[in-house]
Image (tube, rainbow, N blue to C red; front, side, top):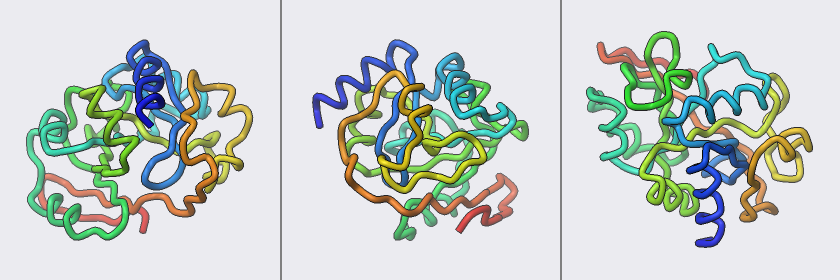
Length: 186
């Protein structure tokens, strides 16, 4: 795993995009603070930049660097969730502007999955995570289901968990600073 973390980090550090296993489905990712790398993902996925993507983070310090105000309920949801949960929070900052939604919100998921966690530990930055498919096509549940267009379009493919089946995307919940809660995807 350490070699894969080093390889992925080198690509990300130089503005590249990677294909990697997450705690849910396979993802396409990059440094969430690099607008050029984020733009490469939008182009590869053939996705409008108005459709924001989520970022993975590995702890409180990283979250507080991106969000000044985090509703208390966010911590409760993350603590109580028994499956990966993405929260859309208001007023994101310190990330690439083209990853922030037009309402200034950003989806974030705290991850404990070892590869992602250790990669972000090395990056010291959040990691973009979007499903490994062309926009509008089905989300692949296994590496073997990822289209050659995606595999050939990234700068590096992580050589871990390629035989694992991941059937489920994360739950997505929008939390606003004024305490509104909306479940986007169960």
